[in-house]
Length: 339
Ligand SMILES: NC(=O)c1ccc[n+]([C@@H]2O[C@H](COP(=O)([O-])OP(=O)(O)OC[C@H]3O[C@@H](n4cnc5c(N)ncnc54)[C@H](O)[C@@H]3O)[C@@H](O)[C@H]2O)c1
Image (cartoon, rainbow, N blue to C red):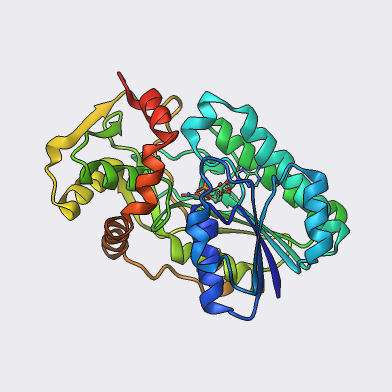
């Protein structure tokens, strides 16, 4: 199979490429990535020179560039991870989120139609469902839950989901969509909660927690997400949406305390900062459909996944030290200084 993976120099896309390399070494992988601040070529260094792998620095909004790559590679399958993905950045500058997440997705689907791919898979998020109240643990997001977004990020992802389903209905493009809960694991950019806290704790820096830290997220180890996507791509039904989640709800503050314990640092490093605008209270996925249809279940327990993740950041300092010493530092100052 010839698989075009967009956004493969980012966190989940790169993990997916490594998953494919392990599980389907016969597949040809073409990685298309613009290399924004969140994309990192050093992440793909171990596969860059493989015969069955090609990297192309292309913007998914660049119609000509995207069509040229399709013409050259004729992919069978497209898995679209490329996105602006950070909620805080979407609150600061929504425009680029609309451009990449909506227009970029439409360009990829136009090329997929023209070149007749057998599957276009859109990687989406549970954030398209909005949030749930903290005092109703019985409520979970199913695929039937109405879309009800809170941030420019989640709105742009919801728009892309709707567009994807319309390409199935209108043009018969064989589309699938998966909506996953919060991921964690190796290669996650250090602005997201878990790597940010690990790296700050390792450097004895304050651990900035929004509000009172009581917001609840459903956490999934990235490899479990990759396995789910691969199942949907190979065995899922076109025109269907699949929720992916771990039944693993945690409050942010409890995660940060676990990280302190794991890294061996005091909880006194925790500092509470002004809450994010429109901060969603709770996300919780019901993964019953993907379990029943494709037999998928999460395999990594949170304690084990977090331990592996901390170990990875300890063993791969060079990877994140380059990031935190660069342009990212200015962004960090802007977001957390005096909040
Ligand atoms: N991280 C999570 O917890 C999570 C959960 C559910 C869904 N998702 C979704 O999964 C996908 C991947 O998320 P991630 O956390 O790996 O994101 P990421 O920010 O780590 O990576 C995104 C990648 O996309 C690339 N990119 C951005 N704009 C591009 C453009 N215009 N053209 C080509 N490439 C571009 C970046 O360079 C980067 O390599 C996203 O679509 C996101 O919405 C993420």
